[in-house]
Image 1: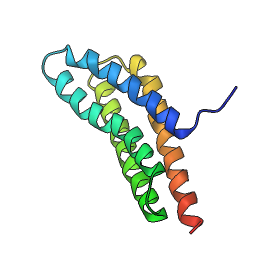
Image 2: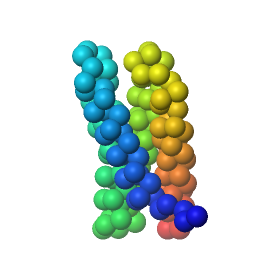
Image 3: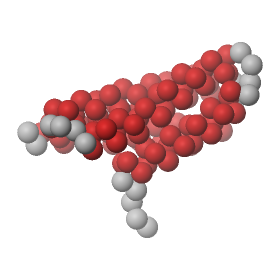
Image 4: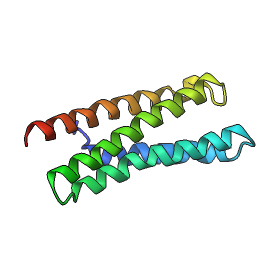
Length: 118
């Protein structure tokens, strides 16, 4: 089985976030509001990973990945909040939560590696 690269993995994650947020957007009130926060953070991870690939310097590359890391951490928060408040069943969010946490660790490792290879 081929391992997905970080660009593909963050893109696939963003697709899943968009689909989840489409469902949240159908709900009135708090679910819709939290969905808007989640879609910004969850799709921004991949966007910043993509931008990093065209970084003008190593510092720019690291900066874009640092933003992706912050967005991944924020995404973990919104997913946890949705589960904790029963806006969506925790079981429905668990796979996304696991993936968001894994992306956080992977992106963190990429940053550490890039910084150490200066």
